Length: 160
Length: 160
DNA sequence: ATGCATGCAAATGCTTTGCAGCGTG
DNA sequence: CACGCTGCAAAGCATTTGCATGCAT
Image (cartoon, each protein chain N blue to C red):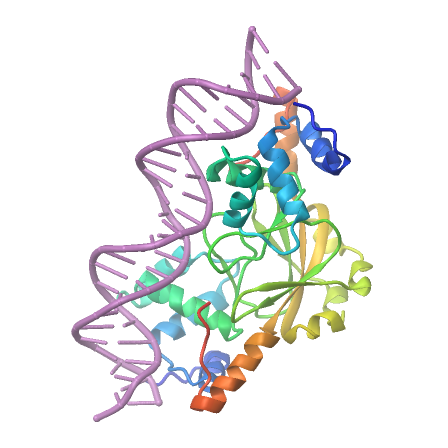
């Protein structure tokens, strides 16, 4: 079963150089994450792929996701909040993570993309990529806190 | 029970401004993470605190860690690899995470520390802090791969 | 006093693992 | 044709939740 879509070239290259087989499942998992706009959870990826490949199981999805991560094709997202999420890693982008609701938003910055990798980092190993990770409180949570303060006079946390 | 150690000032300030009580448990969890050198797991934190406060339970440690995260005193680490880990967030430092063994190493860089937060990020919410996240293969894993290649002619993965 | 926070214990998910059969290279 | 990969099912942990009691304010 030979899939020749150009879209699969990065996957093909990575699998070949690691001497790993190219299966239908790996193709679909790869496409699902790479095409995704947000940061899909494992369950979301699983459900979506099932439409194309009904026989696939959750454990295969996990195995595949970690494998693709090891190969550098995708990357697990900054944690917290019920289960891993994955990032397509298609192009340079950075993250803003809310300390209250723990959602992660992407943002772009030409200035950041130009920054060279510090020597201190490359001394630790072979560098594949780098991005900035910003923490704070997202707009939605800021508003919510203010609103609650109006009602009760107190600041309350969210569900996590 | 009033603890007046200066070391606790940041905790005291944060709890007070959020109108949250200062308990023995919160003090110990805070100290344990802030004093830690590496990136302690929840289990490690728990076991350590038990020495000082034998009655504490794991669920309290979890609740406390998330609370301290919401307050910005500590932060959950970039995911992957059996359970959350926490970072003291004491001073500016950056992360190198290995895609194979998923360990995270700290590094410092004056150049990176001086970079201003991009507008694109501050537009998303209130920014507390930022750091660079580098991904790649750590030296140990690089060597391991080479060694295995010598023996078998193949590249093999690690446990995760 | 007045609730918020903790302990306790059980429930809930998320993630992994062992194995036999299937499909890729 | 051999061996890696998947599907299946069950085990293993990490993390959370409901409640009654204790403690900080």
